[in-house]
Image (cartoon, rainbow, N blue to C red):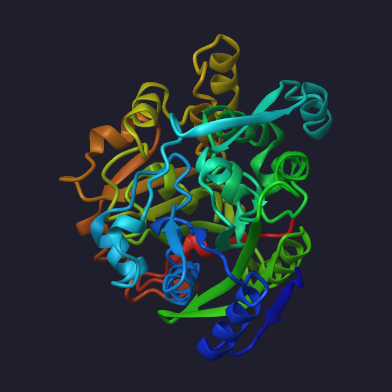
Length: 423
């Protein structure tokens, strides 16, 4: 197919331009009768994927059967309220399929141990099975459209492209082992990097098990959000790796904020509708950690946090072992504590500061108590009390000086980027 690239760095892409690009895509796939759309879930609510999914559904559904399967990975299924905000009344609820990562996948093959060893510099010399939701192969779809946002990411460096398939619609082994491979290689070496170790892993799987075997097209976005206004700056559509590369280059330019010096105190805010667990809420740590000074504090304003894991299994693992540092988690891993649950080990490694700075989670005690937060290795504050001083509605992005002279650095939407000091 002819790939379609559109960049509007300053003013953003208009809805008219967006529709024209989508028309240019669909013109190349005439007569399709059954289509699967794979957007992200609500934790990517600033991706523009909801709007694109609605446009696609409107254009395709009159003449084709259209299903929508959010790329949940291990995340919880979308609630009715989230589906309403993401898909409006355009996508019928009976057209939305739920991906179950434990049961719904088929094994396509594997990434050999020697390839994983080479990718990881010898740190993870294990074979990794490649699994995706079986409907991608046996669902009878004439066209599969993967819709998602390219943005700095703690596991894969730059999110989306084949990660949307191998994790978003993937199974236990690929999700577990790819996350562990990335964690062992080092998160700060991956963040914001296009050719990260995990990306090389997904590239291998894409080349060997997807390319030429599925009618799969990627629609990849780059967005920003300022003063509550969401802008779509890039839309890159195609079947090759090139659209991802173009999106990643633009995202590196627009979504990475290079801070001039480290802050003794960083404050970040988690939207209560978007982030309800530390499993996803720890983006507040991942995306800001490279701005926190040694011995400093990261304060996470988290009024919606009510659990640790997105599912019961991962919640229990977090409560059991906590964010106790890389060496301790690796020791437990070598002892077999995370057998079949390596994603939990990876998450606990990535959520630790290695003692370099402290993390304070400010939650509503009726949703997540002081005892719970402290039991996993973080400090706690009462959201209702501390938000009186650090009011997310009053703080401005970047440096702020409080009335008593305290200087802080504020990040309002950590999921939309990466903040780092280039030292």
